[in-house]
Structure formats: C-alpha cells, structure tokens
Image 1 (tube, rainbow, N blue to C red):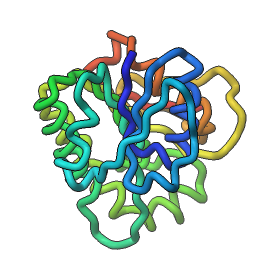
Image 2: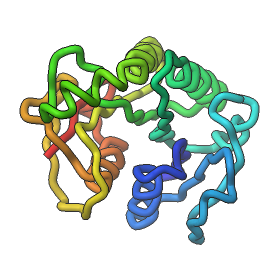
Image 3: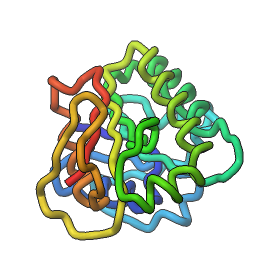
Length: 206
C-alpha cells in the first residue's frame, strides 16, 4: 500500500514509518523541515510540505492509497492548528482522490476524567486548548466524506512494542492509562485494512 504520513519527524511518526516499511508499504513522509528527518529506505520518499500550506503538500498526495496523520503541536494558548490542518488534509485528499484517512488525536478530548490522577488533575487542564482544538479537528473529519478512522490514544511513552493493545470502539476505554508509541503505531497501521472501524472513533491503551 502507498502511504502518505504527516507528522513523520515526531516520536510516533518515526515509529509509524519504521513499522510501515517493515510491513512492506511504500511510504511518503511529508515534512516541513527535511533536514530534521533522517530515515532512509528504498521504499521511503521524503517530500517537503507544510500542513498549514495545502499547496505545498498537494503533489505528495497524488497516487497514494491512504493518509496517516500523527501531527502534533504544543501550546498553552488558544490555537487552531489542529482544526486547520484537518481542513487542509481533507480538502487535498478529496482533490487527489484519496479516500482512506487514519488520524491521531487523544483520549484527552473526552470531557470526563480518564487516565492517571496526575494527568487528570494537572496535565489535562494545562493542555485544555490543545484538546479543544482537537475536538474541532475530529468534527472536521467526521463531517468529511472520507473513509476515516480517528484514533485516541491514552498517555504516550517511549517504550518497546509489546504486540498487544485494547481498543474502545466508542472512542472511550475504561482504565486507559497508557500505551507505548510503538504499540500505538501498530494500532494505526492495523486500521488501514480494518473495515469494521471505518467511520469510527476508537480509543487505544494497554
């Protein structure tokens, strides 16, 4: 399968690309700063593109089978990065005739308390502007005509792949405390051929 990946320079993006290549996919990494992306492989292509400038990445979406978005941006201030990037990706996918989208958000978009107490009472309030923007991002994708799957992970950490995870098909998951970026990447790739989770928002954790 030919895959275009947004957010390739982040920890999750790098793991996603490595596993995609291991599975035999052809990958196009769309990055704003190519010098920050050091992976090389015969089936990996790097294209310069800024998710906030749709014309810059439009050519990279041509002839792709699916798009995976694992973009991330940190800010304590009100922001529109996530919602605008979603609009741009959806618009350019429609123009390129690409239907399959797997998009990463966070279980933090839920208004109910989910996760470790430190996260619920300290970290989540600090990230409220990010989660608010992510809710708008999700709505943009829900309103699209794409074959989408939204993936909401619990607290992320850098750890080895265990080869297992739990999924909440309603976008919620009890006792969703954490998951490694490696197992999250596996989950994201598993969604590409998962017909059951199309047009669904799922939560993922150990």
